Every structure is written in structure tokens, then in C-alpha cells.
Image: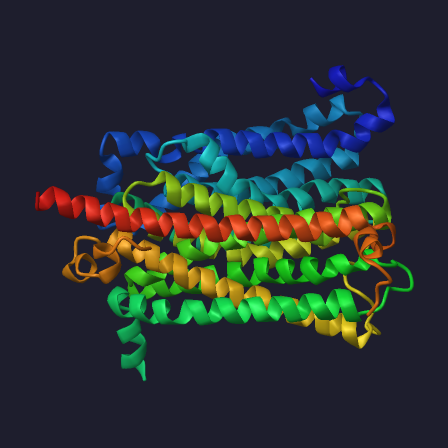
Length: 187
Length: 249
Length: 57
């Protein structure tokens, strides 16, 4: 859509491409968040999950992973194809896919906390967006920045390291925070 | 020592304490404001480069500092609230949020009004301005979340969680935006004055910063009293309050 | 005293709009905040009174 809207000038497209695709990743993650716990909550199975003897953190991690499979992974797989539309060179395509691979799970992790906090609350989708978008910003900055750094010849080592540094704590701590959020929501 | 703290953690005792404190704090805030404005506008000289326009820092820097301090305070009370499950912690966090949001907005507003004459643009994607904008949205998120949940206890605890998650992210957000900013070689503007700031300028700024801080303490004390009345209105002691019986506020 | 006259003070070396725009908005919002806090407090007291009169007509 973007090339059609903005015009086919290659240099412009190459410049905005990574950013556009990354914003797409943010939207994909955000728009599917409200449904993360909604259905389970409505039919009561969420309460069973919370009360079950299994550690809630693991169950939550499973849910987060499922969310990522639906919202993040498809984008990682499609990234090279989408990147071609923006006339990105092949090494940039690889970097784009890598940055999305490392970054989209973080979005799912953070987003899950937002989804849990807003369970059943009116204004759901917009409220979740308001809560998680500020927290998404660092991922966006370093994700899109990685591709730009590569394009401008600076090398994206640092960006990738930072994305990793965000991914690991996110995966470890968000199930815990998300469980706490679920317990708060279900009391 | 711990007993004293928990004594004041009871809404009834805190109500009395806050009631005695806030008028004095308000008076002190007023005095500091007048002193700060006097130093800043009557005594401090014009700046060599920015002329008289620099005087915006006498509000810009204090409100920016306070917007960050208040958020940290909110995170502090949130941790306390989730750990000790005290009702007052949730009230303190809620009482702080509107003031913090107002200061964050003022930081952006005064920053824009400072930026326009100095760098020719109302807005630049400077690291600090961008981080401040995100901080403003964090405040709005907290206020929206706590307003949207009807159950007071759940709202307090959900708000506490988002405040803590936000607080952890504030340094990360600042770092990431700073990084992004230098890479893009954007306007690398510095909102602080050079270290060789005239003594009077510094004094004016510090007095105003202190004034805003004391103001915050005063208004939060006042606001918490309102929250206590609303939430504890079914208790005997609230029903027996002289303010309730009399027609005055 | 730094200023020659009141008009100099308002003019603020050409930066009047920006300086007073900043000071003015700050003062305005803080005054509104104080007024709103007072209003909320009175409403809370009125709420308690209203509920009391419902219980003891």
C-alpha cells in the first residue's frame, strides 16, 4: 500500500521501508492483544488456569508464544517479500527479518501484560493501545534502527545486542508480571 | 519506628495529618514561588545568547523535573501498595497522577515555547522532548486505566502494576530515544544551560523547583483527603467529621 | 531593578509571547488544578451528607 501511496521513488521507499514494516509489526501485535485472554475469560476457563496447580507463569508464556505465532512470526516470514516492495537490498532484508524475529516476541510479552490488566474493562482496545504503545517505543527504535544502521554502513551489531538484551528479560519477567496482572483482574 | 509508619498508613490518621500539613505547605509553596519569580525576573540578568527568552527555564526545568520525580513517587507507592496491601498507597498514587500529567504537559508546552524562538521550531525530536512526550502518555495510560475499572481495589492494583512497568521502562525509553536521536544527527539541542550559569539564574531555578515540589506535596495531601472521604465514607469516623456536618468545605 | 518600565517587562526583549505564554499556561493549569481539587473535595463531602440523609430521613 505504501509504495502506491507515496510514489515509486526508490530512494524514499528504501528509507522509509523498515520503519513502515516495523510500525506494521506494532499494529499487528496490538490489534490482536485484546483477544489474547478474552475468550478464556468469558467462558471461565481462565479462572481454572489461574487456580490450576500448574505454574501460571508457564501457562502465560504459552499464551504469549501463541500470540507471537499469530501476530509476529508471519511478519518475520513475510518480511523479505514485503521488503522487496520497498526496494531494500538483500542484506537489509535479512537484517529486517532478524530484527523482527528478535523484536516481535518482546511486543507480545509487553502486550500480554497490557491485555491482562484490561480484561473486561470498557474501552478495551484503545486502552490497551494507550498502555502498551509507550512501552513499545524502544523496541521500535532499535528494530527499525538496525536496518537503517546497516543501510548507512554503520553496522547493526549494537542494535541486535540491545534487542537481545530486551528479549531475554522480557521473556523471563513478563510471564511473572502478566500472572500478577491476571490475578489482579480476576479477584 | 515501623509502628509509627503503619500508624500513619491508616486512612483515618493520615487524614488528620494531611489536614494539618497542607495549609502550611501551600503557604510555603507560595512564598517560594514569589521568591523564585523575584530572583528570576527582577534580579537575574539577561542571557548573552538568548536574551530575555531564557527566562522560560524558571518554569520549564522545574516542571520537567517534577514530572519525572512524581512518576518515581508513583512507582514507589505502587511497590509499597502491592507489597503491603495498604489502601493508602493506592490513594497516594492516584492523587499524584493528575499533578504529574499536568507537569508533563507543561514541560512539553514550555519546551515548545522555548524552542520556537531559539531553534525556530515548535517541536524537535530531541531525546528529552520525545521521552517527555512518552512520559506524558504513560501518565495518561495510568489515569485512563484507573478510571476505566470500576472496582476500586482492582483499579488501584492494576494501576500500580502499570506504574511499576512504566517506571522500569522510563530509563530504557530515554536511552533508546537518545540513541536514536544521535544516530539521526538531529537537532542535538541542549535544554540545560552551560555550567557557567549566572548564580542568580541558578538560584531562581532552584527556588522555583523547590516551590513546585512543595506545591505537589500540598496538593497531594489535599487530594488524598478527598479520596479518603470518598472511599471511607461508610465508616463512623468520616460520618462524624465536622466538615460533613457543617456547610463549609 | 532590571526593567526600565512596565512595558519593557511585558515586552521581555522581544520574547514576550513565549515567556508569558509559558508562565501564563503554567499559572492557569495550576490554578485550574487547585480549583478542581477543591470542587472534588466539596463534592465528596456532599456525597457523605446525601447518603447520611438517606439513612436518617
